Length: 73
Image 1: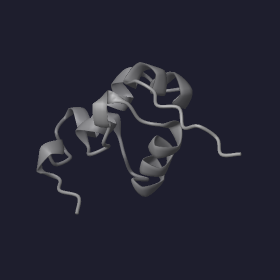
Image 2 (image 1 turned 90 degrees about the horizontal axis):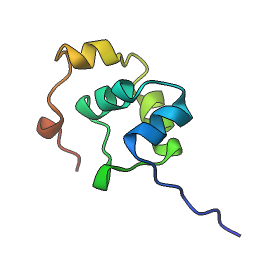
Image 3 (image 1 turned 180 degrees about the horizontal axis):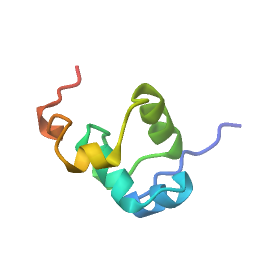
Image 4 (image 1 turned 90 degrees about the vertical axis):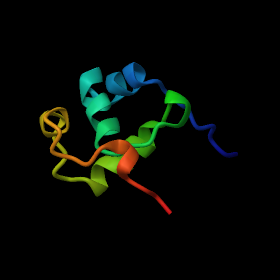
């Protein structure tokens, strides 16, 4: 039986990751995609694994490209 994916909002995702909601907003600013404002814990953890030097502070200070300027093919 396949397990149903649970899509979470930014605040719910922050709770599951044991981070602040601002950390999740920083992820979004740095390029983490949350279609419809939701994502799974697995998607967030995979993104964090592929961005090992991510820092919410750096995202807030604008050290990452703007989210809309990142194109995924």
